[in-house]
Length: 383
Ligand SMILES: Cc1ncc(COP(=O)(O)O)c(C=O)c1O
Image (tube, rainbow, N blue to C red; front, top):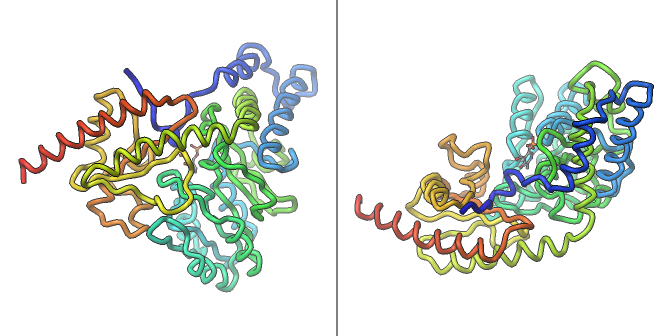
C-alpha cells in the first residue's frame, strides 16, 4: 500500500502534462532562439505556455518570466529589485517566508541592505501593525509576503498588505507557489508588483516556474548572457518543462471549487478524528487556510518519529516543510507563531491532492490512531 499525502512538497505529474511535454523531448528539439522552423516551433510552444500561465492569474503573457522554479523566482524578485533600488534601500519580509525568500533576504542584509522582519500572530497571520511599521521606515523599496504558507496553509491578506505598502511607496512581492491552483488568484486585485510561481506544485514538472512582474518593474537579471525572457533570465529555455507548466496551468483553469471542496472534505475527516485524540494540537484552525493543508502536533511525540511510523504503514506525510525536515530544527513558522519548541518538534503536515480518496484518508486515520497510541505508551513507559 502506498498513500501520498505530501502535495505541498510536490505533486504527481498529470498524464496530460506528460503527453504535452513528450513531443519536445522526443522530437521538437529546436532552440527557441533559432530563426529556422525548428526554432520557431519551440518558440511558439513557449508562447502558448506563457499565455496559459498568464491567463491563470489574469496578466498579459509578456509579464511572465520563466525561471527554473519558485526558488529562482523568489531570488530574482528580491535580488533583482534590490539591486536597482539604490544605496541603503530597505527590504521587508515576513517571519514565516519560505527559505527561498528568507535566505536571499539574509544575503542581501549581509551585503548591507537594511532588513526588517514582520512577525505573525499565534495563528500565523502577518501582524498588520508590525508590517505597517516596517514598510513605513525610511527608504524601504520592497516587501515580500507569501500568499499562502507551505506548512500551515494560512492565507495572508495580500491585497490589504499591498495597499499599506503602496501608501508608503513600497512595492510588494508575493510568493504564490503554494496558492497557485488552490486559490483563485488575480494578480492585479492583489496589488502586487511581482509574484512567484512553480509548476511542480500544480501537477507540472519540477525545475520550472515563473516570476510574474508588473509592467515597468525595474529588475536586474541574476543570470547574464543572451536576451532570453526579455533580457531578465538568460539561458536557453527549458522548452519541455515550460510546455508542461503551461499545460498544468491550463488544467488548473477549471474545477477549482471541486478540487478545494474535495480536499476540504478529506481534511475535515482527519481533523475531526485528530481532535478526538488526547495530546493533539491542530495549528491555525481559526483562520483561512488552504483547504488541502492540515498541520498538527502530538504533545510528547517527535514529528520525525511519527512520520517514520506512518511511512512504515505506507503513508507519506511531512514533518514541517520538506526542505527543513531532517534538519532536526523545529519549524521556523511555528516558532514565529509562538509555539513552544517541544511542541513544534512534534509537527506533522498532511497535504491532500485531487486524487486522494476517502478510503485513503480512513487508512491514515486508523494508522494515526494506532501509531499515536503506541508511541505515547512507549514514551510513558520510558518516563
Ligand atoms: C512557499 C514556497 N515557495 C517557494 C518554493 C520553492 O519552489 P521550487 O521548489 O519550485 O524551487 C516552495 C517549495 O517548496 C514553497 O513551498
